[in-house]
Structure formats: C-alpha cells, structure tokens
Image (cartoon, rainbow, N blue to C red):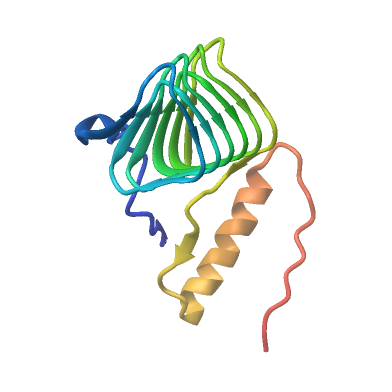
Length: 160
C-alpha cells in the first residue's frame, strides 16, 4: 500500500566508477569558482565555490574555502563552507566547518563536522486512495496504537 518512490535508493558511492578528469595538485591555490561535469580530485587549495556534477574527491591536504555542490563527495581534507550533495563520505582525516545537506552520509571514526545536518528522505506515497483503502488505513492505525504498550486515545473524524 505504501511505496517509496525513490529510484536512487542507497547505493555505494559511484564516484570510483567515473574517470577523474581534473586534478588540482598539492601546492596549487585556485581562486575563483570551479564548475564542471566530471569528477575532480583536489589536493591543493580552492578559495571559492565548487560546483561539480559527478563528484569531488578532496585529498588529505586538500582545502576548500567555499561551498561545495556535487552528486558524490569523498572528503579526506578540510572544507570551510556548506556542502550540498546526494552522497557524502567524510573520512577520518576529514573536517567540514559548515552546514551539510545530503541524502546519504557516511562518517568514519575520527572525522569531524561543525554545523547543521539536513538529511533529505524520500517521501512515502499512497498509491490507492479509494474509500475502502482509506478505512483500512484508519483501522490499521487504530490497531497499531491499541497494541502499543502505552495507549493513547485516538480521535478520528470521518470526512463527510
């Protein structure tokens, strides 16, 4: 009766299946906004926002001072800014000082983040909404509450 309409159910990060097309090496400083479609590996420092469609790998000595927007991210280094992604891994050497918004999050022991976390969830939908199913849903909700160890009075109003 209830179905999750999420086609992107939790899957392992696909970032390793994509070819890394760009590397910003250790010792390099890039000032400005970085935009691209494929995967980037950052070992240097970026001062500015990073918008990469497929993924970002931030190495241990990598540093981003700005917001990160990407599908998948693996963080070994430091981010001073907000992170918005579909899949996010923070490794034990990773540090994020900023808010995180993601669908899936994996944090290794020792990793750190300071900020707010917003986990987006797929919405449950009712496929069949004819009156018989609605009554059945109402009855099952009442049954579940009555079986609970602590009973709470259930007040329902039937739509006219």
